[in-house]
Every structure is written in C-alpha cells, then in structure tokens.
Length: 266
Image (cartoon, rainbow, N blue to C red; front, top):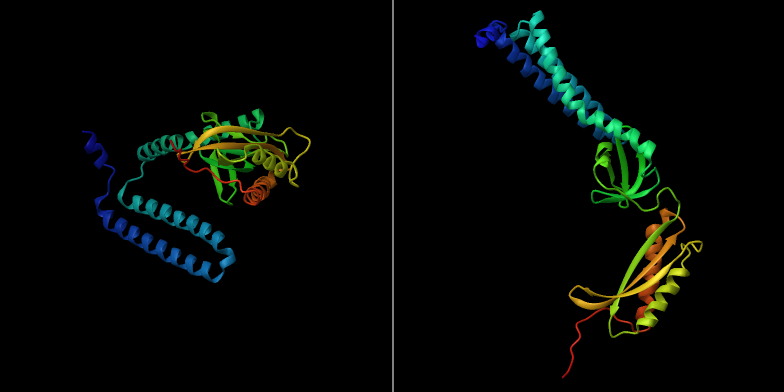
C-alpha cells in the first residue's frame, strides 16, 4: 500500500527529460571545471581562489540540475514538499552535529585557555605553533610549514601538551650519546659550556645537564641530557642546532666517541 502511495507522486513521462537535464548538468560542470583549470594556468597567482570559486559554481550547477530533474519526475505537492523538508532537516541536523560541538568546544577553549595563539603544542602526533583559534577549528603550523586544521571538539576528549603555555620562552631538551668508555665528565662539561654560551640561551631560567646509562641502538651508552630555556620559541630549532653543532665539533676535537659495541677479553 505504501509503495502505491509513493508511485502516486511519480511522473514516468518526465523521466526522459530528467535524464536529459542530468546529462546537460554533467556536461556543463565538466566544461566549467576545464575553464577554471585553464584560467588558473593563465593567472597562476589567482589559481587557488579560482579553484575555490569553481568548486562553488559546480556545486551550484549540480544542485540546480538535480532540482530541475526532480521536478520532471516528481509531483511536488504539499505532502511531498513536507516529506522532503523533513528529510532535509534531519540530514542537516546530523551534518551539523559535529559542527555545533566544535563551536561549543571553541568557546570552552577561549574561556579555559589550555593554549593560545603563539603556543607550541603537541596534539595527535602533530607539533607546531598555534596560528589561529576559531569557533570551529584550530590551525596549527608545523615546523616544516604544513598547516594542520583540527576541529575544536577533538580537544575536549584528547590530551594536548603546550610547550610554553603562553610564555615567550620555552624549555628545550637536547640529548647526546657517548660511549661508556669515554671521558664522561669532559663530555658533560662540553655540553654545559655549549648550552650556556649559546646566544639563544635564556640565563633567567634554570638549566641542567644530567647523565644516565641507557641502551641506545642496542649499544650500552651514556646519555647526556641538556635542558635549558630558549629566549623565544621562534628560536627553538636554531638553539638546538647551535648547541648540537658546537658539542659535536668539541667531541671530535677531544676524541670523544659515540656508543659502540665493547668486547672484553678474558
């Protein structure tokens, strides 16, 4: 009985016209895409904007084409419009569920402030600087200049680590490994000197150089861990590079070697 009720609203005679409309819609969309691509090659500096505009136009073409095709095969009476409207409302509600959750999470982030613009954070395997906090998402710029967009609602359930928590300076950790048979005290002194004499070193905060015996790459080694604050988070990698370069050069000059397999004679 329900199938007969549904068939009452269909217009079989309009099916050829609907198929023709869909065919014309596909052709127009493809021509539009080709035109936008050629225009983007001609105006390279506007290529991204043209691609966005082309996507919007193709979406509009498909929307209009599908609507016109529907008019040919469906009798859009009051009952049908109400049914379609209800279906669309439910679909939009499901689609906007995550969007609404992200907006609520955005307000929570702005109020609770677990991080802010300019912070260096680690989240879901990504590490970089927060460049934008919006109502829907957070944009993170990694150290290799890759922009990562993260929905705000993700921050409500997952852990996020902030390296500087709103401050300009930040703690940096640098590890060095030397053999257990090397001059450990001399190696420690070299690391401490390179650390505290770096132009990026913040003398206003605590620093430390610690030792630990560890297994590194299946070799028994001594880990020399340097911890210090960099003057500005923007110099994070410059600080690490500066200290590492001078430590390795000093190790080479003083004959301090990396870990290796040691053989004992009986």
